[in-house]
Image 1: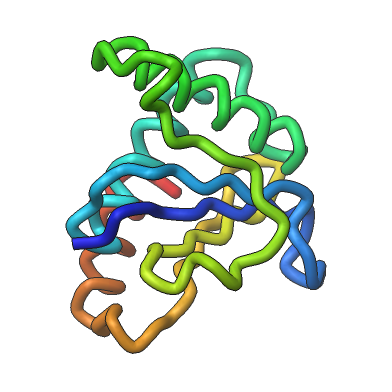
Image 2: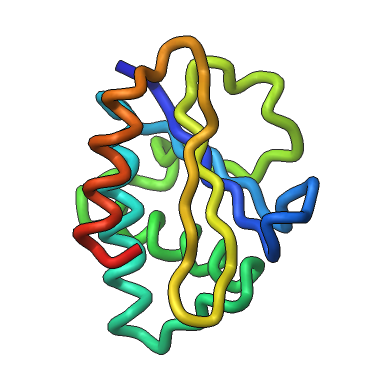
Length: 133
């Protein structure tokens, strides 16, 4: 089990740095669990004026959506673990998802680590494919 996950938002696949990097302090079992969370987020975007072409806006909307999830779960401001971060150095035990902006639907990739198995990546890809992502 991981204690956090990170979502990086990129304008293009050729960009070396994301426009936003958000760390969420939440227990996640594996990559598929993070894929499920992203699926819920993209479903939310689709129902509320989706703008998948703007990575910065997606990042801001992810933060807002995540705060709403915390509020719905009864997690007060003092216990919300949501951070904009600059570097990945301190996130070795976190699952990292890269979200690439696109006009029609975002593209998601997960960063490989020693802890993430090929099977987990395939399950996550299946979750996202079912969501048409």
